[in-house]
Image (tube, rainbow, N blue to C red; front, side, top):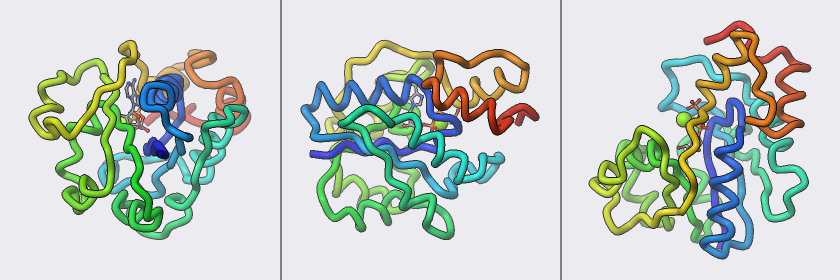
Length: 189
Ligand code: ATP
Ligand code: MG
């Protein structure tokens, strides 16, 4: 089976790779596909980097790992991004790999029940989100991956860059170079 790791990937970082690796190994998946969202409607309150940048970084993040790939269908799709549209296009049963914060929010997604009917859910623990909070909304439908808690987030990395600090080794090297080459996040948001 194939794993899907969706996100804004603004930027992709080590916790995404660790989550995908754990899903691949612990669930015996064939591969894990990173799927950057085009216009994530749940993030409409903040500015998200241009899809071209997020796609370029995501491609760089998975390069060189033969069982990871990246899919640009959501960044190419006009309008808000809804996971259900992608799942209907894929037309195969997949494992949705979600951080605990994303898993907790799944019931608020567009057509959440249809999403749940089409996928297995694998949850990655995330600092700040109690397991019970996820179990309360997903219950037995979620299986948990064994991953050390990593207190890294796109939000934190963006503010580090804005403060002039290095994010090297918190993101894959090609992503670090891309951020620098394109002057991303320097203004802060
Ligand atoms: P932002 O702060 O911009 O929201 P993020 O670090 O949460 O960035 P996303 O692209 O929003 O990254 O997340 C993609 C997926 O990866 C989500 O399912 C999210 O829960 C998960 N994820 C991201 N960081 C972690 C982490 N440190 N631990 C566990 N899961 C994570
Ligand atoms: Mg997030």
